[in-house]
Image 1 (cartoon, rainbow, N blue to C red):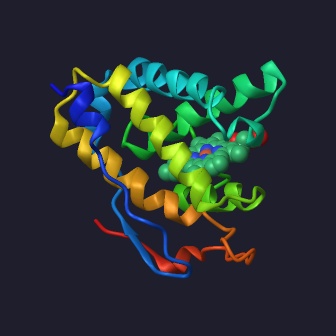
Image 2: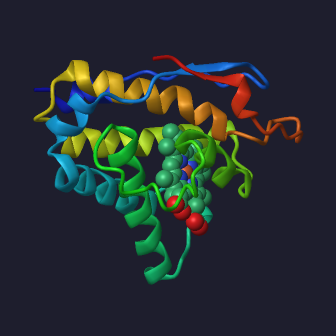
Amino acid sequence: MATPREIRALELTPVEKAKEVHFKNPPAAFYDAIGKEEGMKSLMYDFYDKIYESNIAHFFPQDEAEFDEVKFKNSKFFIQICGGPKVYEGEAKGMDLNEYMIRVHDDFSITEKSRIEWLGTMREALADKAQHVDMALIKEFWDYLEKFSKLTVNTFDDGSTYYAAYTKATEDK
Ligand code: HEM
């Protein structure tokens, strides 16, 4: 069990340009506890509803059908990355899932400010939809998001860009 207050206290650390990022995929225990496919879908649909109200809404498709497609694919990614069924396999075209995800984000100019908004939005979705999950498991899920999201930041305050090489990221087992 977790209270919204505890969830909202989850912290984030700043991205550092070109710095190696170590992360661990979220545990299957989180996937089970959130309520497997249905629970994950409910979390991610709530997240995307909040994204539409956020200051990064403009990054995402404004067309409803296209937006639904992103919601759906996003849910499938998180189901698989947490150790659930391999429902995203076809999308990644045989690539490592995390490597593919970094490349998907290369098409957008993502700044630290956008990352903070993205994470803050996810934290709100967790506060709404993950209260029945153990705080220790929520922390492990958050840890993956907090670290991995650094690899999606490619545009920096001085206007320069840096695209994270997957070889500079380490998936700690
Ligand atoms: C832990 C970090 C993140 C993960 C795991 C993640 C995951 C995903 C996934 C699974 C998709 C759908 C890919 C597909 O089409 O199959 C996606 C798309 C997208 N994400 Fe992220 N994301 C992360 C961080 C961010 C951040 C920080 C931003 C900042 C703006 C962002 C912006 C987008 C955009 C713009 C799209 C594409 C929408 C489109 O297809 O038009 N993501 N992300």
